[in-house]
View (cartoon, rainbow, N blue to C red):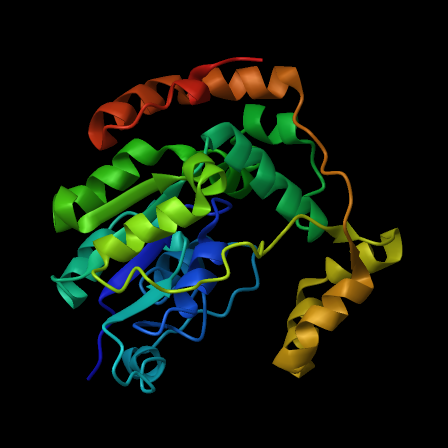
Amino acid sequence: MTLPTFFIVGAPKAGTTSLYHYLEEHPEVYMSPIKETNFFSYKQMQEQELYYDATPIQSKNQYLELFKDVSQEKQVGEASVSYLYYKGVAKKLQEFNPMAKIVIMLRNPVDRAFSHFLMDKRLGLSTSSFMDVIQEPKKFPLHFQQYVLLGNYFHQCSEYINHFGKENVFITTYHEFKKDTDGVVKSLLNFLDVGLDVDLNTNKVHNPYSAPKNKLILSVYSNKSLRKFLKLITPIFLVSGVKQLIFKDGDKPTISREEYNYLVDYFLEDIYKLEALIGKNLSSWKVKK
């Protein structure tokens, strides 16, 4: 029975999709063919009735089947960004494989929050304004969770460090990753103890911003049942082409100064505690516009 030897646990909208694909290219690394298995978090997601149409792996046999093709790879991994937020998942992973390593990618929580909001807007999953959501958590509890609470990294990272030990938790930031992708990837390969002299295509950007080409497409795409049906009937090799037909690249909307500064105040205490925990200078996250 092959168990994952490392987990990319989050955060959402912080570059984990690109990292997953870069590692997938490495000959000594086997990545689960499904990103976002959500196996260790699906119960919490179901209890919350989270509004995404993700289909998590729910049985252990189903989960282990994902790794049946592992052969001579030195490291075996999976990536599910829900694992970082939900309390108790770190303990589940530690019980599942106490020798596993953890990979965490963090992004300025304000930028991450707005990026998550834009994704939901693109999918037709949010019709409210960003400011309404962040100022009225009781009115929009699930959206507030996805945009704001997911950015409270201190306790989330603490849980993984407490269960796996600091030496077994690799933490980097989206800024570091964007600024020096090759450098961060090599540091991660060293952490995973796999070969560094490998030509990985780190120039390719995965999961870039795009928007529906018109209101009709937005209306159709925002129908959760229809989107799930189309996903099931569309062959994997056609997915990329279909997305090009219905989405367009464009100028990404920007967060307002008022929204940005409101969230800086909200996250400030957590950022200070996170800095001390992970030993990184996060001063740019504290600066208002």
